[in-house]
Length: 335
Image (cartoon, rainbow, N blue to C red; front, side, top):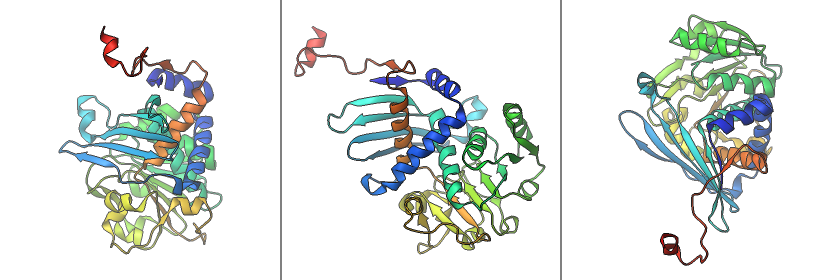
């Protein structure tokens, strides 16, 4: 079985270029969402605790099966630990044998960013060039690269309640050709923004964007609210917007729309990608991607990695099962 750890993942991204990887990954995501009906779909299993959540995200297209283990612990930074870590497995359905075991902390950041930009490519108004980014933690730089790679976004207006986090982002991207400005408030950040990305970590109902902050024509990429009791947008924004989700059944539990009545209308993204339904109809429309992350997205990046690293040196062979002379004689390994 192929095993790709953090060092090989970093080397793969550096060698290929992060925006190339994101662009290629977006093609896999789009392809898989267009064949949505082939996948097993279920809301993820989530084990909530006072400190955070541990989740399992499985799916299968009938040929391959994939799952991701991922946590979300907002207070981890106080222990000098990451808020989110993850790993994933891709298996062949025919035999049940795993073929790829991969780190998914960096991979999740890549697929989240690629999905955000892919959705914005369908929903944001044409000619969008400026993005406000509220919450500048671990996901922020990936989002910036994705939106430039897929939409040409080159101006970033940054805000975080911890200014040092915004300064971290500027330092990380200062040689990458972005025009960045650190703002003193979220209200200042969204001025003149064509796209607003919210990506905060606190596990609570919050109003990161109030209704008066969102004008006509804006696309909102809401990626921070991803569990019960955690939201970022005021409900009034949703009431006057067109809202798009990955998998409605899961988003009703975990997304921004958990605030809304059960009959509140949303559109699943596969319907937009396949052309079954319309996204933005007017330049003045407000569109919202209520992103919570779904297993098909993790399946897509596992499939992408498995294809790209095959017959390369970006993985190691992992001795996880052993090789039996007689497949019925497991005990023989001991003797």
